[in-house]
Length: 273
Image (cartoon, rainbow, N blue to C red; front, side, top):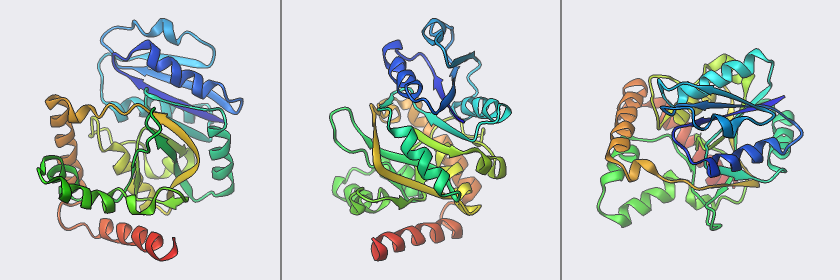
C-alpha cells in the first residue's frame, strides 16, 4: 500500500485540489492524510472526498511534526510506502507506479524524488550535497552572484545535468517517496526542526543506516516552489533557527560523516557518470 500526506497552512483550495487529484488518480494508492495547521478548518469541506482523511491541528507543531502524525497513521494501517507531498506539487498518473516499481526492485532505497520542474517547464535543482554552514547561511547573504553560482554548480549537483538516476545526499522535501520499514529503523522527522531542513536531517540518517536517497528522472512532477524563506523575514528567521539546530546536532565545520557522504556522491558522479 502507498499512502501520502500533505500539511496545509492557509493554502488556496485551488492549489491543494491539484495535489489531491494527482495522488488519488492512481489505483495503487491508499489514504491521503491531510494535516491542516490553519487557524480555522475552512479547508475541511475541500477535503471531503473519498480517499482523503482530514485532521485539523491549529496548534501547528511544525511541518515535520505534521507529517509524522500522518506517517504514524500510515504505519498503523500497514502501509509499505508513504509519500510526503508539498501542497503546491502536481503530477501525472504514471509517476507513482514507476517509483513503486523501482522501490520494489531495490530494497536498499529509502527515499526517491523524481525530476522536478517549475510550471513553465524549467528544471528545479533540488539534488544537493549535505550542507556546510556557508551553503545554508552564508550563501543566502552573499552579494557576489558569480561566487554563489559557482558553489551552486557543485552543491546542487548541476554539473550532473540531472539526466541520469543518481544517489544523492539529500533530496527536496516537496516529494519524498519513503520506505516505511526504513523509517521504522532510523526514526521519523526530527520535530525539533519546525520547518526547513527536516528532509536533510532525515536523508542523512537514511544514508548513515545503509539506505540510498535516489533521484529518479524517468518520471517528473511540477512544483510551484514559492521560496517563502526568500520573501519573508519571519520565514528566513525560522530557516536560520533550523540551520543552527541542524549544525549543533551534526557539526558545524567539523563533520566527518558529511565529508564522507559528499565525497562518495561526487566520486560516483564524476568517475562513474
